[in-house]
Amino acid sequence: MARLARFQDAAGGFICLAEKDGVFHALPQMLGRSVTDPTELMGDWEHNLEAIEAAVAAGAAPVDIAGMRFAPPIAHPGKLICIGVNYHDHIAEMGVNAPEFPYAFLRPFGCLAAHGEAVTLPDWPKMVDWEAELGVVIGRTCRGLTKENALSAVAGYTVINDVSARDWIESAPFVGVDWVMQKAWDGFQPTGPFLVPARHVPDPQALELELSVNGTVKQKQSTAKMVFGVVDILVHLSRIMTLCPGDIIATGTPSGVGFGRRPREFLADGDTVSVSITGLGELINTFAAAR
Image (cartoon, rainbow, N blue to C red; front, side):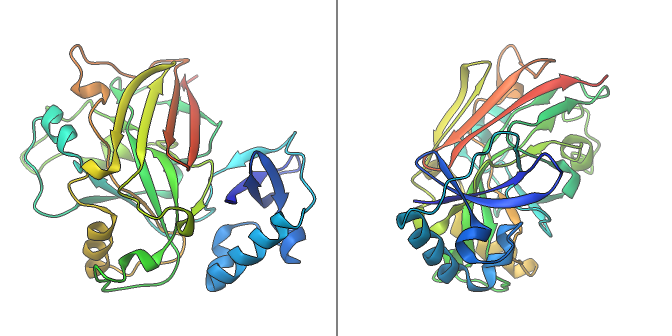
């Protein structure tokens, strides 16, 4: 199974690599053309994946990633869509009602952060929280998906930490929570390190999520416990908007967030958060106070 990743080299340029068994291979060498983002392959996604898998199996030359750093797996997603209160146990710990349909909001592009990147804790919010989530990456332009064809629109899956500022939840006005104040801070959506093609994830509702803070497990749950699964989310969103290649959907978090704990716990300067999902890899970020 080859997983795709984007890297930035020492000169500031970007390149896509394929990883298998801990060894990285350069997509430009395997495909014979420049590839700086997986969306460049999505016009003929399955054919390109076949070519990548064949080149890796044939012994494509490895790449030394020393001196490189991970970049978010998609360079310029048109949309960052997040689904809230989508696990039964998270609904219980937050003390809210279960939604009748997938409860969604949009995030700005500046929220993206890469695996290994230090995320700045803003100096305004004091209740910065973690949320392990399965990320879905759209692979083709689509509208009006059905339960039967929804998963055909998925290019692959990734790992997301949906960082949240909880300071204003309990003082929210009658119109509801201000999602910009809670979710739109720069760097508040670490994503990656890999984009795992959907062909390697037979059932997105059979994955295990785990999140730890400084080595202590805070969240551990199966995606089977979602209120609305990936299919339902895609059907719902595609009734509202056209989904496009590279769009990223965060599908919600299970229980174990800091706001739901007693006493409550929040991220502090120097904390390290690790999020892992079965087969998709481990996303690690440190958090640093604004200086």
